[in-house]
Length: 128
Image 1 (cartoon, rainbow, N blue to C red):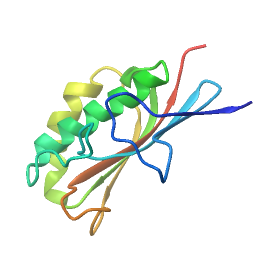
Image 2 (tube, rainbow, N blue to C red):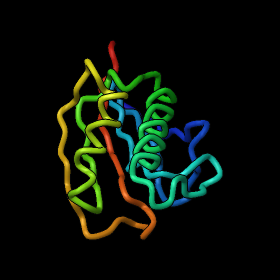
Image 3 (cartoon, rainbow, N blue to C red):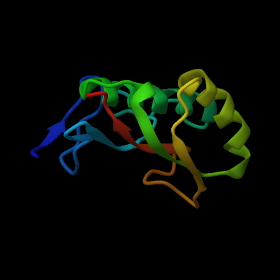
């Protein structure tokens, strides 16, 4: 089975990794952060704003592979402060209600850029 490496419209591009890799009906989404299409950080210092951007990016990544948030099988969520847990739940419910994936929440000392407050990577399985 050949791997399909995708650069979704609406996501900042990178020369270092593929944002989405599709292997058959399984889709792997690289960690999504609060960056817009031009690569600019969105909502600096605003956890909810960043969480909305991350979920929007995740939607774009899955759409490029022919999927949606309902196809998520597993997500790993990285936050930089344990106090973000409750605001995360509020935002997450808006995007994942009714189709909950397996999920891991990790509190980390820092992400790749000090302005990032949240990052989510994912695995989805598309309907055959």
